[in-house]
Image (cartoon, rainbow, N blue to C red; front, side, top):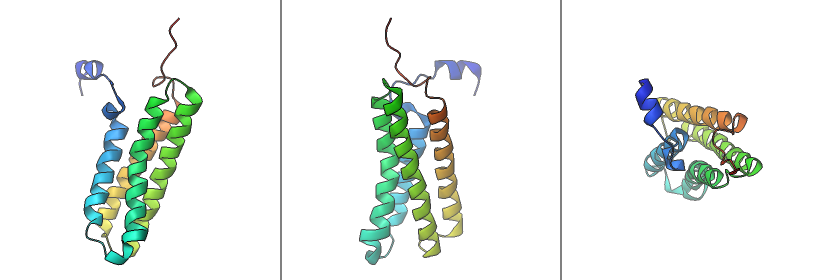
Length: 135
């Protein structure tokens, strides 16, 4: 991306954050692929992985809403990170139960890892996301 595009790209809402977009996309991929899982998994694996993957996005949105207070912002990002880790564990179960193949697992687990790294970077360096009090 050239310098002009980087400068003109402005974050107006949490939906403009790349981490939110990636988390939302992963949640939708999981939703689509889990439609074909066995009915006996409906109240266990299917519901759990859908819930945790969607929770990553919702916690990022909550963090954005609380960015006036660093501790609250980091707390909600920590929740998002935990849900992302849970999603990764459920992906392992889906692979090992043969509901997804190794290629699908590798792709989605890689996305989860990327999302986790982005959330981690936000937790370590929250200042550029926080709302500064007016002087």
